[in-house]
Image (tube, rainbow, N blue to C red):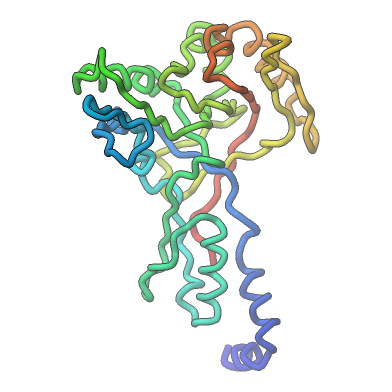
Length: 277
């Protein structure tokens, strides 16, 4: 052990850095965050400096607080404790993946990443769907926001649901209210095994994201299928999902002025261990 360590220290710094970097994954893929309960909407009064503020009358805002979703993306990385050289490589990698490592305590090796609007998705299980739909309406009623001018900030543009949910007509017709979820752009349909929020020692990432996508064409009033990279492992699943989207997606949602585009992406999920050497 001592001999190996001595040899490693004698290597050129550039080579040592490559070895430290090779110990890390290429990247952290698009991640799933989980809708767990009805406590994510918050109200606030807009300030003068906020977009949409109306002098004299003022405006209330409803925010979907993605920071309250929890530390679903958590990494244990002992590499940051090895030495300064390894720590520097590890922190650079963490920051590239969206983790805030600038203020990491010298003796801490557990990092968390908050929800990324541009890449991550909010997963709503079949059991949570009713509560997810009801929460904005119940929140408005509880806070007395009905019949008032309210700026809604959903802060989520990508949702994930199970294939079993997506192919049930009565449930599919209740997709998110576009007046509330006005940023809706992508629905990931998870084929096969579903993620389990109870498994706290793993993180869940979207896989097969680019193999194929159904894109809503407003002019043709239809979904166009676009093949991506790789082989379609389950072509029948793509057919079922495409048929369900064409037959059951509510026209009011697809034709709404907020709905600039909509992608339906069949995907699978991968279970990744949070422990990175």
